[in-house]
Image 1 (cartoon, rainbow, N blue to C red):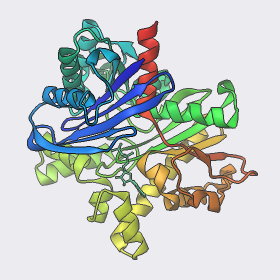
Image 2: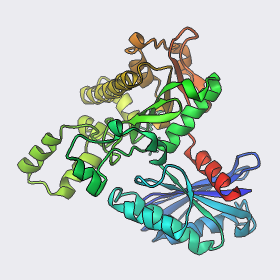
Image 3: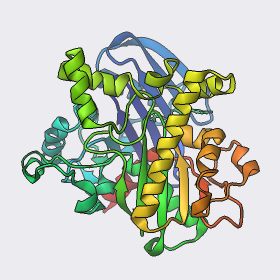
Length: 399
Ligand code: ADP
């Protein structure tokens, strides 16, 4: 069975084609700058030369048509005909309270995803465009939705409710939903497999640290609490997002600067976090460079970033009355030994003992970076959200 996995953002589209017989990736790629005259299509077919095309791609539908074209092209193709694609799996950011698992996309499911636009105005519209475009190009191919929020639907009320008047939850569903669920689920299951620990008696803290970041407490295989909230703005300090801040400070700033809702939204989402504090970059690689060169602002940004991750780990160890496994994943989590070191050297009270040599090794494989004696096992696990989407898609269309 060959499957296409699509991850549509507002101006980009990432894709992978899987052969589910052995879960191998036949091709992967991305279209960037959708909506522009010089959009970029990068396509990497397994065993063939990578190609890059710059062309006008004004909408998602055209982007998907371009992808389907290159997938069956002579030079870089991996299929002969669309009919070889048995199903399409879509990453959907917000599923609200209605989806606790992946589902086959029906008109009712589309309605619910559309209703969730309110909760994720930056993400769900692009996801919907992706579904519509794929459906137009391949009308007979089943499509599956895999939600970032689904894994966190196991959170108890005490974790997902905000202490504000209850009617706001009842009326508008204002609550914590959490994100990166596909990633937290994948890495926690992988950790249990590596460590041979049964799901039913495990306390895991999973740190997904990329451009966006979230920490999740996973008790007995289920999400108990997570740092992102109703939107992906809450929680950790991120590349350009503030994370946690006193809501009264937001009101104060709006008043003083005479900000509109759009201004404050943009300030908190795009001009805060690493870039806001350092004034240098939202990219951890550049922050680390600044840190090594003794740049004060970069050092402060790094320290705040690390400190806030560590505080969440402490909070979640308290929430679960302990922790057995600590996982680092995503761009920064997988590739920044210095961040992992700073975090772990201040978690000795929990029983974390980092193996400093193992921590320095760069690898694309899952690996243990704690010493054999460490009470808490620390793992670096490359996330693979696309594979989870492909597996769920296969399961749903096969049943
Ligand atoms: P996204 O949230 O966009 O999926 P990723 O998980 O791909 O993000 O993470 C992207 C971030 O990973 C980059 O902004 C960069 O800061 C960080 N990163 C990538 N490689 C390294 C590295 N070698 N060292 C430190 N940080 C890195």
